[in-house]
Image (cartoon, rainbow, N blue to C red; front, side, top):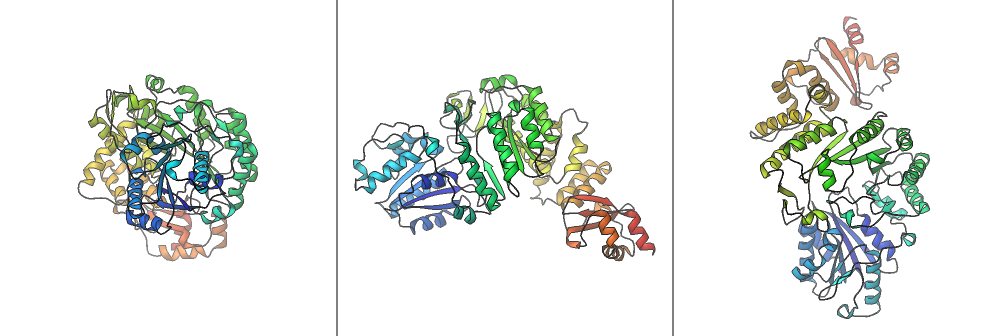
Length: 545
């Protein structure tokens, strides 16, 4: 009896941790893992799975893949009527009864953690029992049977999800790991609100799993713990282990800023640049909003801790906002945006509420959301559909002009003295909408557009941003490059000067450097380090000589 477990990941670079848990836990059974991307065509996914000629197909279902998954599953059932189709994951387990009633091609649904229910089903089928004769199994929903959630899994019994071979085969992808399951908080919009408590994996399990990634020099590992620092002492022990054993792996974690301790901040701050990425969900700065969704908000403590982390400059900091929460109107959201923007994160994600199955907000009648994935909010009692559409435009402006990281100097000048940064992005959103009406623009076009819009006072910062972030692209007209006769020869001459290269700590490699002369000032950009140098004196000496 062959079983294929599959997931349609959001991107090719992603991987599925859930599938690996299921396979390792059920190592006594023949299980093949097949991963695809939602960007793959339906026919490609279907043909790939059909060729496996499996007896059982199990699908991991999430917001981003459930619709394509259902289409694939239906085609497989038509092609192989005798195969069994199982669904699992949050987009199946919380809708088990609906899915079984609505989709005849689905034979069973995993409810909750799937490792043990799948093992029981596979063992009974392997013993020769017919699927229709299976008894009721906790955590495995069957048609016309009572549905009961599975038992909480004993994490002491969990095998490592990755083998050494698996890590090597997926080394170029983002790999996921968890050091705990559950969350201490009960946010009304989050599926973790249904869980009673946090369950930590054994510390030795955590260290062994992380060491595998570090030894293989995996580029990026994302810890999917809902709140990695729920236990400061435990969190500190894991971070110290990472610092002592990690060389070339970046570790991404989600933290609750309000409960960050000075010791944890100092530990994270002691890491080499790029070892950690930190994501923190602020969601809103409206106290009434956060109270309504079950979050505790202490603005001064939150801001202080985030600024303390930021001061080290050694980690990427990602902050989140959610539009469409209770009691958050358009004006209130603008204030929340100003609060988060004032913390100067490396990325500010302006997200929109998803009213997920199994969450408290699913029962909230004052929130209108679509009935299909991703169940996004359309309007609420406090914010209109038109205002949410306006925030979509602002989101695009934030992505292009802030999160892209290629207009850093320009955005600093635009917002550093403005009392309401949100208003700046509203203006940029208007510009983006106006310009996109005439056709999609390339990133390099926006420097010229911004110059025409902002005027001469921004020419220097726009020029600086362009040079730093656009390698080997001709300078736009507004920079007015001035290359005197002999400029190119002088550049090559400097590249042969060992003292010049030593002084600026550069390698004599023109593919890593850019030279420009604007308004009488000669600039050298080192793409390897991101540094920009004024080398006017050296260039002029070379031209004169």
